[in-house]
Each structure stands twice: as C-alpha cells, then as structure tokens.
Length: 309
Image (cartoon, rainbow, N blue to C red):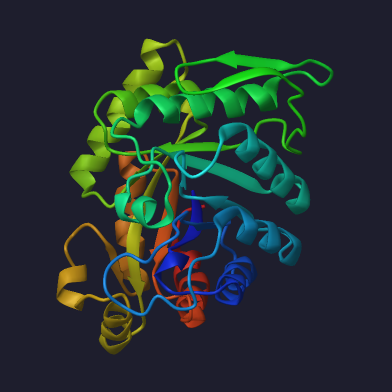
C-alpha cells in the first residue's frame, strides 16, 4: 500500500507551512504530499495569510524536495484553461524530476467562484470531461505532431502539444461519489480512482462501481489504483487527539464517527487493514493543521511502520 499526506492550505496556511509539512512527510517515509486547489477558506476562522495557488506551490516544493511525489487532490476544472493547465503540470513534473500526480475534479465550491469572478456553470461534468480529453490528448500527442480538439466547451486547433511531462504516463486521479458519470470518466482517463470522506460500506460500493465501469469498456480493473481520502487525527494520548481535533474545528467525539481515521498507532493500523480489505491500495491522510508538523512526524515514525507496504 501507499500512504500520503493530504492538506487544505486555503484554511489559513502559507507556502512555508506547506514546505515544512512536505519536507516532514518526505523525511518520515510518506509516499506523497497532496494539497487541495481552493482560493478561499471554508467556514469561520482567520483567513490569513490568504490563499496559495496549488500549482505555484507545487512548483516550489518540486525544487525543495527530492523523493516525495507531489500533486493535487484535486484541481478544479473551473479554475484554469485546460491547455494552459497541461503546460503548468508538465512543467512542474520537469521541475520535480518526474514526481507529479495530477488530480482533477469538476469544482464544487461556488462561493469562491463568486468571490473571485470565476465562472461557475450549473452543469460542470461536460467541461470536466473535455478538460481530461484535452490535457491527456496534449500529453500523448507524439513530439513533432499537433493536437486539435473540437468540443462543446473547448476548441484547439493545431496546438504544438508541448511541453511533455517527464513521466511517460502522468498519473491522473479522478474521484467522487457520483453513481454513473464519475466512474465512467475514471475508467476512461484515470490511473487512480479516489473516494473521500465516506464510511466503509460506501467505499466498497464505489470501488465496485468503478471496477464495473472499467469492465464495460474493456479495461482491466487491476490497472486502476483505488484510494481513499479520510480526515485523520493521530496521537499517543487522548489529550493529543483532543488538541488536534480542536485545531481542526471539531470535538474528538464528533471525529470518532466510524468514518474518519482516529486514534493511536494500533487503532489506525486496524482501520487501514479494513480499508485494504475493501480494495484500497492507497490512503490519503487528510491533516488540517499545517502548523502541527509533529502530527506528520508521529504518523511517520509511530504509525507507518505498522502499516502494510
């Protein structure tokens, strides 16, 4: 299995906070560092220092880390033009020496779109699917050839289709709980399907749905990595857990809802074993307080050694 650190920097954290977290994750043995792609804090609280751009941040981290993989979970298709996003991601892949993973979603946080003047169409699956077609098409076009695309939402004519990512196959992550279109799109374009913030019975259902979608188009389901993303609170004592729950804006009792990953090393190992039994090959530990670097270090030094690899 693989284990990553997944963060939400829009909640009030700087580039330096993210750098310290990513370097701690690398130092303690995690496979990857992921961040969200939002421009505004969700809920009440101090918004300072303000948002950081996902791909600008990952470009910086690419030059200040050496092993750990870096990506978005997930970028919003509403935030960027697909051809430009393809260039940005390929460039960060080059800056990292081939360590980037590209997560893309439809976009959902309407308030940030209104605040920043970003168009927020009522129907977003169409543009989302076309973005995946454009971006993967640009990357897969042979060098020396051009890429054209005529869709309902985007049109490209003789695009140079450069630069190429360093990786021959850029990892593409698609996630969500939709019953039909999401698994179909994942089966067509993704290397990883992610389901987040759901109880175990729902995770099992969504994994079965995306595997069936693969089979319907003749794809071997074993070629699609299955992952979960879950809020995580880890600590050696109840006091540690209570403190970290409070920093995340919730009570420990609320966090212990049967869905989240909460507890000490043994309790977390038991939860991961259940997720593995459901088919999960990767777990994204969502940590909310990026100033609590000790949280990453505890997970890395006390929990990771107990988990299946």
